[in-house]
Amino acid sequence: FKHTSTPSTFNMWSQLTILVATVASTSAHRRLDGQKTIAEALGGGAYIGIDDGSLFHPEHYQEATTMDDAATGYWLTDAAEKDDAKCLDGTPGVYYHQPGSGSGASKWYIHQQGGGWCESFDSCLSRSQTQLGSSKDYPKTAALGGGYFSSDPAVNPLMYNWNKVYMRYCDGNSFSGSNASVTVYKNTTLHWRGKHILKASIDDLLANRGLDKSTDVVVSGCSAGGLATFLHCDHWAARLAAGAVHPKVVCMPDSGFFLDMDDTGPEYHTGMTWAFHQQNSTSGVNDACIAAETPTSRCMFAEHTAPHITTPMFPLQAQYDSWQINNDLANNTDVAINAWGKRLTSLVEENLLKQPQHGIFLDSCKHHCGEWGNIRIDGDLQGAALQKWYEHGSAGLPNKGFYNQNKAYPCDSCCKP
Image (cartoon, rainbow, N blue to C red; front, side, top):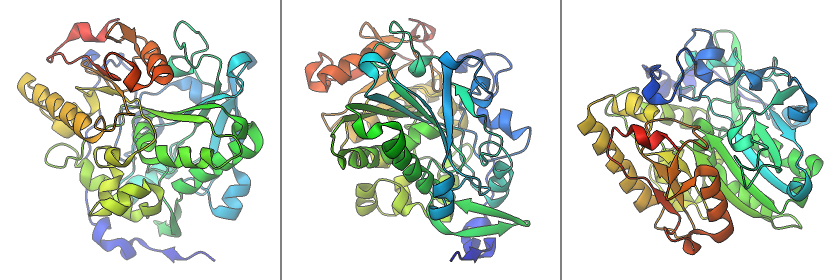
């Protein structure tokens, strides 16, 4: 039995108005001229919520051209019927899987897609009509591309031949929602079930794709998917540890360490707090954080969740993250940007690196996501740094896992290998 609520049920939150600036298209953001974000490309001009700056890769939204490059899509239809594992519009959640080979046959790279967040009923309604809120137009196969998905050992030395999973994002709140009620808004039914899409994806991977026999797992994601990695890292590890085989599990969020700010820019704090309450995300984020933090909505933010994560993490993070600089800081003076970078670095050291199992690749290039293979710290590109940290741990590295470029802004040379 499903209860149906109307927006008036959440009147306290539905009255909020969120104004969000999208990332400007400049070369300083490591964004090609004319290249769109996922939210821009899929939104088609409509406002579908906070744009997290994740760049649009068309190969993820069309059928793969060759079987060698193809990841097969799996629709979680049974879970949608039995556990409401549904996108915003009520269609089933979906993930794509490309099998590993050789020495990587039992090893897994799992990527949670980004694409921003909806933070009002209007933005969630608009999002539900796009591929960020509906699976009805997803292709049967997808080409995963390069970077962390690359099959070239020179580019991706640790994971080039691993199983690769691409979890499509259609719930609007980083796979965290668990609201048993639907909301009817402007004659459209909206669902808030991201946590259940995550659960169904893990269930299906374990039961049907061989994840239950895994020996090594790296869980990742970019931007909103990077935030999802912070929020769910310990959950992934717990689910995988519950089986007969106990794989090595680590997490590698890319550009997911969003600071909790609301004094400038698009009111990220306010929007994410609305989403946390509307989607009933209390049980869909880090349990230890929920037990320790007041208010519990703080656990929707990586900066507050990080101290509670026990599974080893190796984030990829820009000290001068272009999305956060342009949207949260909203001040492009060198003085302000350098102060922001110092603040972010301090929070990383205090909230993450005080736990010795964690490391980080913290660069001084102004960018957001990506740049795999384009930035070198302590002699290593991202792929090599991840491999060394994964194989030796933070304690076994001269830098103790803290790859810190630590250059003043602006630093064009920081963006070059």
